[in-house]
Length: 339
Ligand SMILES: [Zn+2]
Image: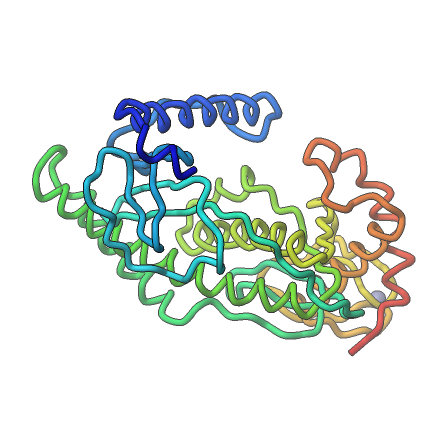
């Protein structure tokens, strides 16, 4: 690494981000053919997040200071958190978001000790009014201020829509929308990080529903769109944090009738409109909608995990895996402990 610094040709620094771009294109096509994503599109100067990736030979790292290829001075960085002790970044990504802020992301190798084993398990139900309901009965509300920020966002978007295309005022309005957006997502991400870390630390197994994004995004309501985005982030964070700390994440089929199923007797109701928050089953059990759903999700996940399927299922196979998950659930819910 040391000798690399002196002999570096100036062109290489430019070449590296290009090589990374080719790698990204390959990933994009891979995702497309696996039906995980749409056909890759060109980057747009206006819409894309501008970014460049630098591999090891295109930057120098000395005494905690980062200098990119072709730059004379180290970057003046405000750190979001310290790098782990004694590591050097292997890849550096520089990006600018739509609100005009610059970011540097560093990829480092780090070893994470698995969290101490626990027997606790939890199921999560996604919602709009409360972001997540746990099978323990705990409701996790949306981050504070979000409602007000959302109103601001709607107002900023209305103003943007009235500005003439290509005008300076439109650009100003666009920045304003972007700023409110980033504030909502930043707060939310911070909130989700705290929540997921807590859930993964406290539980050996976490069960969630597979709410496919493709279906969720069809709903045009702002609140809905934001909470769906949050759910996608939440799942992603749970996936990698569970892997880090040696926990199990079980994703159950999205056709599973989590809300309509009575966790007490196993009867599935025909209908349960969204505005019904509490219901009484024929067996006499009284259910709080979200808590009942979260408990059913947990039971289904534990059953699926025990019989070996349903653990991080492939999206394609979730349809075929459906029947086994459902049958197992009926048995498992009967034995579910009531807190
Ligand atoms: Zn019942």
